[in-house]
Length: 251
Image 1: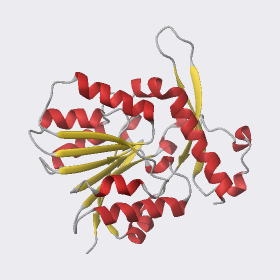
Image 2: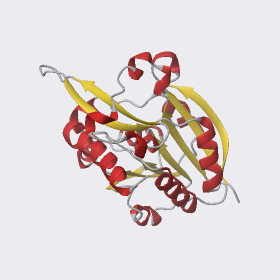
Image 3: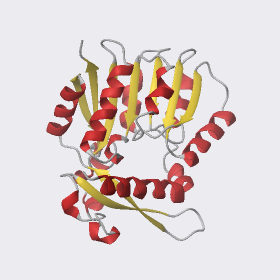
């Protein structure tokens, strides 16, 4: 992918979260069923790194469940991080050392923030599909691999909106934002997002999303030094809108 197209896709999502951060956070104050299914399998009291932590719902849940452990949540959105810190401040203190920091995964230096936070498990729920360019995604995944100890686990989820007729109807032609589709990669999609806060008119935003195939994810795992341990589908109508996978570091 050429650098101009890459930057324009990044700008689309950055603009979305700047404009709709509070409204989006209002729809994400509960963790998804698939994430809840994963919680019992996490090492209790372990050291977690959460990429794309959003408004902090997972951190708050872990702080209720565990009496010890550490959690570092990274996100590029200042608005969502503000929501996360406010929610943590308002909650009853638990036993987990919870920290949040701002980081952009498309900036190769993001890993410096995480390097001082030893981890057992890295999480990335609904994150990778918002990152354009297959070479950038592979670089990020290799950085995740380097952070993990031998046998460490990376757990992630990817949006599978092809299972929803409603979401498929929200695909928007790339010409709407002046991007030449020939410069994109297979699976790159422009979707609209709609939400109305109480007493306010409906708001419409646009987001870049990459639709992963299982074959693509398996290839990425192998190239980044992982093996795919397990997977399941969950979330949304029909419990098929999220594909969850656990990858284990090889060697």
